[in-house]
Image 1 (cartoon, rainbow, N blue to C red):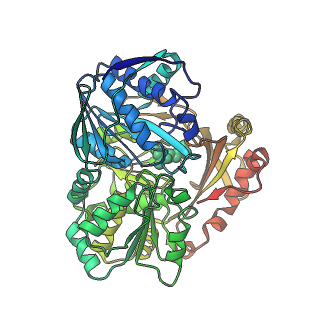
Image 2: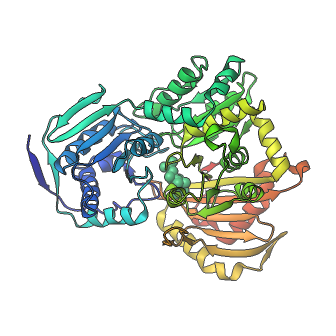
Image 3: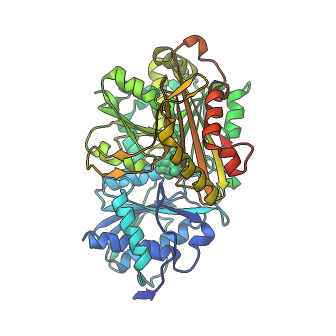
Length: 546
Ligand code: G16
């Protein structure tokens, strides 16, 4: 076996986005493309003096190119003096499982291969990101250092060793490095068993409680099967589409009412089980569904926070809640009632890391179907589903009852996100620039029944390290707390995706049964009036409404 130094030249556009580098598979398949990015990760870690002899975790969501990428990364890790790599069997590790294993095994960090909810297959997307020793996504200073290296490197180092057998657990040597193929599920399942009341959930299933978990042919399937069917005794067949496929069965593994239409149809129909749930490509997102009711992710965070103490892992109460700026303010009301802090961060789970590490927040959530807690440093789809099962088991209430009760107590934050996907990037940027130009004049203006209290481009100052992140989304906040937020997605791979977020608070229980889009119609009209989004994007309607 020989360590080779291969000459290379930089590729443009290797700056990590909201969650790592996400590109078309075909872009990753260019000779040297993946290798350059991985070399940049190792150069960044080398500069911190961190790599030699240390342990890394490696795994992905099983999408097309996962296995090939793992073999390349292993050979590069060996060439850079890594001591040991823990890799999930078959190359499979969900994003939350990577975070769990990094923390449990005190690893230096981990490399996650996933483009999350983006479609897979030879014509789909692929992605790679680096997580640090707390188990969470690398903060901006590290992702920017990685990017800087991608723009200057001239060679990469790689071993010419044969591919490693990823399908058997156990240890293998690759050059001087140990490759330990680990069971993909067991560390994670053990963590879950310590957080939730598995006995109560088991008893719930024994009483005939019915559920469907849709794995969307993505990475959560094996975790949900092992835990929900295996450990909690739900009947076989509760978890469907459980086998991870390289192309997710041709579907878009994004657990929202549009992409999980089959689950929604079941939950709306006469044969609906008591509880429905789905998770995404890499297992960090979740959708919670009751009969004829898809729970909004913002409400799910608020409900989990309001009821946190039902779960053994949170018996002592929560220290704080953190939500991304576009996420609804439902959680803020719970935080106020509990007398704990509520933090508002930019979009991107990485922004929660410091708050969790400092013990300032216990629960975190985002409108993009992400919920999680201090147990790891990623959002966690199966965790959220287990929390809801624990809540249902502890209260004996249905999903619908729990949601209605919550609105009755705290009021309802009507909430929706309109996505305009694959918009011409120049047109999208021009729209945002024009909007920013108008912000100063908006405060004090009245639109129908709404008066603008504040209009700005969100800036976040991290309360722990004082780092500042600017231009994190335009927000137009009304005097009654209603909000319009516009930003460009940092995870798309085609043109630009414009996201329009809408929120309106309703205290009166008699008005909690409105159709969400109807309730938000006045704000949708104001958003168009102010941004001319449809006209600038050249679209009649959003591509996706959730
Ligand atoms: C990623 C990030 C999330 C973010 C989401 C959407 O999720 O981890 O923090 O909310 O993207 O980001 P954007 O609005 O920029 O597209 P995932 O599940 O794709 O890793």
